[in-house]
Length: 489
Image (cartoon, rainbow, N blue to C red; front, side, top):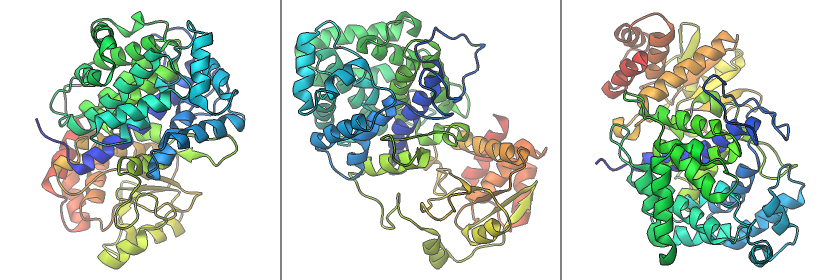
């Protein structure tokens, strides 16, 4: 079994947050609805009971951000989460679950209010509102499952004191961390059910046998069996069933399992956004942020608190990467630093001139300013970027392609194909695209070759030859192999 590299671990941490938010937004239009068959197209269309905007996440992700935001500062104090919940509620949250509302309207200390609610309503206090937001807890104490379990339990108990709610959150949060750090490369199988079982030691001993049976049931029965998924146990089982019963593609892009399993969770009906958000957190921990299609990332949006500026996928990724690193960035301050282009230019120079290939300009950061001045309204960055390196009125997508080696790019074929397809979609819409890396040595030429192979009516070898002639050199061999695989998807 191959251990994940630090780059893969960081990508998976971001994936746990992004895939959960994506599941939330994908399920939002169908919340409280009936099961959906395969003929129903699933899109982040918005709408639903609360009139969400296209791609907008719901209360599931808004409440998760109350955990993630302080974690991204290195603050693991449960009091910070409590303050976040109260601020979210006070700002007039659009959608608040019945049990969550009953506790938050009482006010601090929330854990006391939640216990009182359980005492007063013992048969109606095991909703899924704690589990839906637990994804960030899996990033709270990386590699320390006992502390993760404690944090997950404490933050869940702020609104959901029922033991089932707490146990479910503990199991899921520990499974997220376990998966991030132990899942092998995509070519090797990963047992999601066993990852959840790995957390049983952090559940009180008298409840372990029951949870082991519930997990086994989800591994053996289809997700549609767990219809009452507003209840935390059924939501837990439905999410796990969606993951383990969705086949993993047996090709060069097994990470497409992430999208297929999230869609399966939505199709169960009922509390669609929540079950998909729960499933997405564990799926993202396995496949990473680089498994989310740009078609999803480009529309994903929402607020942490009503009245605050809208956040996008890139903001979630910044928070997640900082959270799993204990609140720290790298030596350049990334992610979250304002500008990186000056650093790149100072260290690497302007690089080669951009090349126009089949209607798209490809190059390095040295060509970014000129591309913007000449009308580029979509920038696809294949390297780390600052938050202000591209004007706010220009669509900017950052792709997590790394030019080191294959081990840092487990989703390479999917990533190249998806990026090429996204570029082709924008071109078909009449947009002007500039795709770049730092110095156009490897990443930009590789994406250019994938774009030509998938949309320029040339075979992969000819695409690489054309790109090599344009830039004066070929990308690294592992990237050339990725182009070949991407062309076949």
